[in-house]
Length: 106
Image (tube, rainbow, N blue to C red; front, side, top):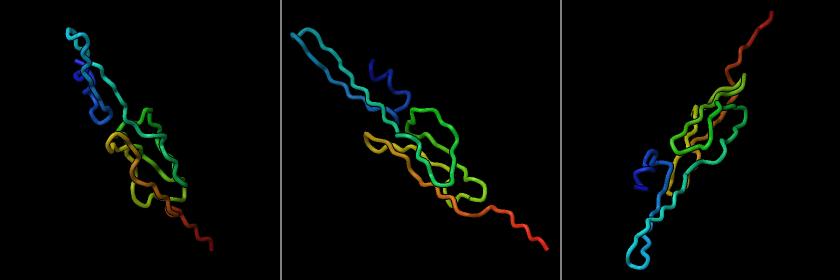
């Protein structure tokens, strides 16, 4: 029953169960739950991100935009990705000069 109640997000949980027997009559199931999540949302130079509620579980995405006068070079977002028993943010946000309006006065 312990396993059934924890399968709602298999990307975010690690479940370990141990059967403990005492005096040959009773068996107890002991469960250890570890929540897998990313750390704080990283900040990138000249970029801001949308607010996302924590905890930051695997498959959580965060969208970024650049400040005025800059544009995104590649990725628009980062994602929390699970790797074994840990999770980390993947992708890097890079804002480069651009998106500026040039006014010529004669």
